[in-house]
Length: 173
Image (cartoon, helix red, strand yellow):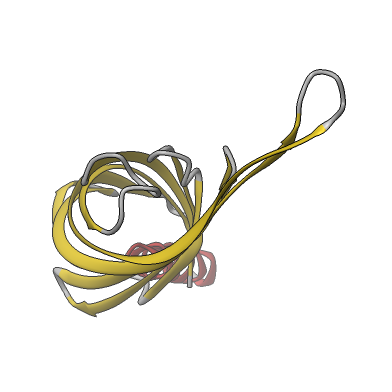
């Protein structure tokens, strides 16, 4: 009889533990994608209510003579599909700064500079739609599409629209 009670207690305890991990208040990790060079972002999610959360992403870029950093904040609605699968949609905004430096070495090893250096700031508005899976252990995988509209000067982006598709890997706590 003691063994049955012990086994039942363990099963109940594990089921509550798995449920708690799927409804974690925080998630921290990386969002890896490609939106015109912003290949990696540090990503943090904070649960507000049962079906709402905030997401903050800090992205950086260091390529093609352009250095940039951006911070995006999103408000998301989350709906359960089945088990650990959820889909979500959201809206948000962000801001950042960029620096353009056209100095490089040509094929002969000589230093080349075309006299064009520039820097500035930008703002953006964004939408977000995606799907995620929360494992029984504290890990979340997500795939999302974030269309972004930029307000900035022409050196950083030649057009104001940036489609951003990314894979997220986050630790739940």
